[in-house]
Amino acid sequence: MTTALRWTRANLFSTPGNAVLTSSIVLLFVWAVPPVIDWAFLRAVWTGTSRDACVGADVGACWPYIWARAGQIIYGFYPDGERWRVDIVYALGIAGTLWLTLPNIPRKWLGAALMIFAFPVAAYVLLLGGVFGLEAVPTLHWGGLLLTLVVAVVGIAASLPLGILLALGRRSELPVIRWFSVTFIEVWRGVPMITVLFMAANMLPLFLPESLDTDKLFRALVAIAIFNAAYMAEVVRGGLQAIPRGQEEAAKALGLGYWRRMTFVVLPQALKISIPGLVNNMVSMLKDTSLISVIGFLDLLGVIQAGNTDPEWASPNTALTGYLFLAIIYWAACFSLSRYSARLERNLNVGARP
Amino acid sequence: MSAIISVSGVSKFYGGFHALKNVSIEVGQGERIVICGPSGSGKSTLVRCINRLEVHDAGHIIVDGAELTDDTKRIDAVRREVGMVFQQFNLFPHLSILDNCTLAPIWVKKMPKHQADELAMEYLARVRIADQAGKYPSQLSGGQQQRAAIARALCMAPKIMLFDEPTSALDPEMIKEVLDVMVELAGEGMTMLVVTHEMGFARTVADRVCFMDGGEIVEIADPETFFTSPKSERTKLFLSQILQH
Ligand SMILES: Nc1ncnc2c1ncn2[C@@H]1O[C@H](COP(=O)(O)OP(=O)(O)OP(=O)(O)O)[C@@H](O)[C@H]1O
Ligand SMILES: [Mg+2]
Image: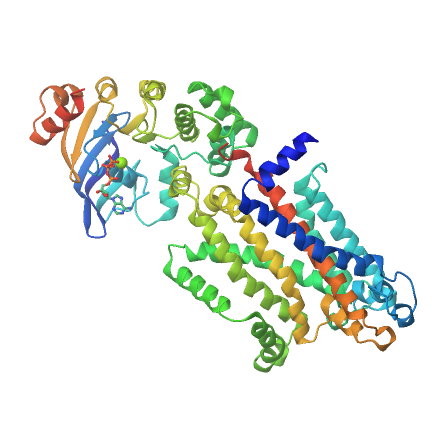
């Protein structure tokens, strides 16, 4: 007890300035947090079948609204009878993620190989269908969490390797490759994401011949991957610049060719110091997935916004509940991503100077 | 004696700065050459041109029968035969000492891992740090790191070893342990080009000592002649400065 007291005094009230700061932050919490908890949980309605449950003078969050929309939130507009396919993809994704992230599951390499090569194929076939007797489900029927995850995962998985290549290209000794990479990066970084999405969705089909007409979601994914690759590239370039020249020289002197020097000597070190910046990019990509609502897709944000105006559930608290739920989901996803990256950094620190 | 390294009329510019001026030198198989000279005289540049870490602007460099040109395949082949040890060690910090040593044998020579491990342990034992194989570079002392770097180069079984001031970054008490390893290596008949200011090493090991100044080879002679009766005034001045303590 006395140690706790001593700790508090030493860390929170060491100077008058610190004491003021500590007190203001505590006051801010006392002022802001209880009302939110009161509204979201204590006064909240937990069960019900329609808006009637949620109208009343002293009523907080309207959770039954979320339960009622759960199907659409999780599966979008995927046909009811085919939702088991999405479930399988979710299950595979969760299993793979646990395999790769939980420290005590062995054979990480096998897990990584399966997640990189087998999982995308399985997910593609299952979600899109049209083969093996699976009913085809066009991407316009995807939505909600499913669409958000597809956009985030495909976007991240495609933009990172592309960004690494661009970063390497920017440092290439060949002027043409260097010039191409610089132009590519600067062009995409200079355009707002919404513009890119609009162009991919609406303008590209006007220019391309009909035979090249592709799926709108596919075009959006390509645009998102390319756009974010430019940002990834700049983060990786920062990492590359921090590696002493002697590292590559030593690898050259051993007779290692360019790709081996990069793969085994330069990139492992450069990517490790780039982790905070890369994860920062991934978190903003995850949140930016909601932008695809501007080209007519209803992602997580989209289905919740659509539901908020549903007359069956209209109440003063409906929309707020929807947004709070959305915030919790996004926050949980982004927070886990950043915690995982912090652990990754710690684990990779073995070779660093103590 | 057939030349394994032949440098003829080589010039090197850094922008407008003339770092190597028409340098020529022939190194025979099994010959040990020590290069010395004041800071900025072009010693590192010359050594780094030999495995093409620097690209020379004029003249010819032929290493083990292959002329160094833009042909990357040939350069990689030459680099396989030429080991290099740097002043700053340049070990790979994210790999253990053993993995530092086996990286090139596995990926350049396509050696099976267990065989590369055996080979690396053999060389690590020879430089007397076999017990450090599992550690990371940052966990070793400077002298141990430099010996690991020598073992890493030797694992490629090079015909030629280049040393660029291998002991300059070391505390005095660690210099001897590295020099001892280099003396042993010389005793085994390795062709060596060593940039160093360790004149004791030059005296006992070198076949010829080469003095550079201002991007030129000023004087090159056997150690006896070099230290007792140097011809050039510049050599005399340099020797008087370096040998006075
Ligand atoms: N990358 C470079 N760009 C520009 N100038 C360089 C570069 N590398 C070396 N120089 C210059 O070339 C000259 C020769 O350099 P070099 O490193 O070969 O000298 P050195 O004899 O090894 O000196 P030291 O004993 O200090 O290592 C120096 O004047 C140096 O400033
Ligand atoms: Mg030097």
